[in-house]
Amino acid sequence: MRRKKTVSALCAGLLLAVVCTGCSKGDTLRVPQISVRQVLKVDGRSYSATEAKVYLANYQNLYGTVAGVDLWAQDSQAQPLEEYIKNLTLSQMTKILSMDSLAKSRDIALEEPEIAGIQKAAKAYYESLSEKELDYLEISEEDLQTLYEDYALAQKLYKSLTGDINSEVSDDEARIMDAMQIVVSDKKKAKAVKKALNDGGDFAAVAGSYNEAEEVKIQFGRGELAQEVEQAAFALDNGEVSKCIKTEEGYCYLYCVNKFNEELTDINKLKIVQKREKAAFGDVFDAYSKTISKKLYQKAWDGIEIETSGDIKTDSFFSIYQEYCGELF
Image (tube, rainbow, N blue to C red; front, side):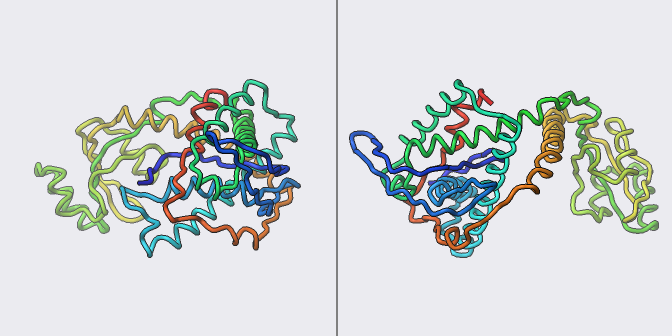
């Protein structure tokens, strides 16, 4: 059964020259029949069908199973899933090659300790592949090292561009609140809700009778609600009910269940920092990406088929990289 894992938003690699070299796996001497068909070129650097299949194979297994269900075995899911996997792979390959180009323009390069870790990762991943996977991928250990080097260079660029980002986030900025809501569309209903609450009605019970929103229980942080609703919400203490809040859609009442969800607030702090990093990276990367050439070899790309026979199970390309190189970048 394929396992679904979390992978990094980055994925990529490039091979400048493909060489047929003898490679050993166990006691078997292998000479990969390397495919040199170019599928993508970014700023003069080409990406072959061989490299592309490494990412396609890993993505197909990482995303091919949901809640224990093999999506590839579902006739209605196989075609859209294949299209999604190929689009994702192409997008990430283009991004990684563009990032590597930007890194070189800024004289960012890998150092010896980093390359040493990459070599170990390439060896470990190569040795994890079955004979059938090697036949399908047509990949050598040296090729895998190149893929990992490009992946690592992109990570190093990202760290360089985001290293000065302020990682301090206050509790107030990141605060996540638990609440209940009653949303109605007209003033008459709003008055009925107010009377029911003033008469001592339980908020959840009143919501069950009047609420027109899809949910009663909600969780939110700053910037997620309309300004007038947010302002009223974050002024509440635990157990308090807001006054009637007029919005563009109608009227709203809020009940504060927990004004400070500590666990979700800590998670939100990480999200806020990541958002700052993405903004800082995007400003530079997006401008640079527009200046470099990109070419897709459509016929060669369309000719790559995802192997769904069940023999190609590899899904550890990214996790093995993280194991050997995660602390280096």
